[in-house]
Image (cartoon, rainbow, N blue to C red; front, side, top):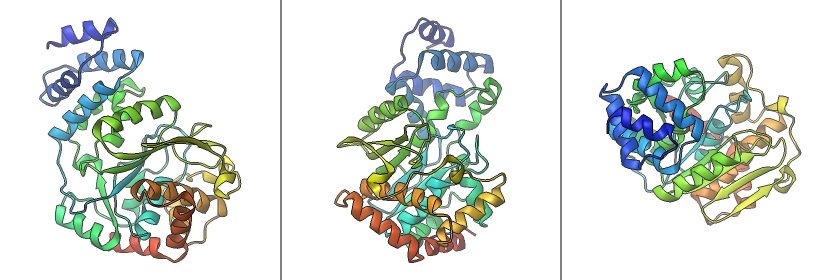
Length: 333
């Protein structure tokens, strides 16, 4: 389909099929469209909203043109947020990954440098001396020995480079901002995803149902793309949908300033380490435990939430989560 025809369709409010958006993505990577055409398409789609099949088509194209990873494990999870909530929290999901790994589960996290916060997953992991890799042997060895492996997105999603200049020039979120959690090249069968809005929760739930993964989608009602404990939060899984309060988990309400990630990567790393070394504030610790516990209930469906919370607490307080980080850094160093 010619871009003129595509744009006419989208501007008129029409929808694209999964195959059409995949073909568009492939065309972008092959240099078939100008920057102006890509910008026009992304703007039009953003104004009317992207749908499930359109998002899946872009995902298909990114995965097909990227670098895959063969993980030697039957069941593993990714814990990730959509980003863009502009809350500048510390690295909650990455820290939760280590707690889940310390509890004996396998975690393959896909992430990148910060876009809207001080420190993204790649920032804090790099700050520990880990070197990003696409080496499958090293990735699988880390997963086997530490329970945790990390996939730095630019090494795998090659197509994202093709749209990066346009996205930067537009200076507003596009459908590509929604794709990060969906293009983990290891194809995890489980995912805990944090979203900033309930609209995103519905969109991703429909996506997950089509691709067939065990999922938990979380949203704090006050706009955090994770369980922040700053108020009530909603969790949607394959089986149920429920609103929780911090008190339901046995925690006190947290103030937003207690979750701030600092003004530098060094400050973010110090917060991250203080949690894993069990010397952080109670608020920081509890937020990580809450996110880790819900992740455990996704990957281990036999666990009740109460049991998952206890499992997460034991992982953190025993030092096993910290040991998972140290072994990971040794292997990735």
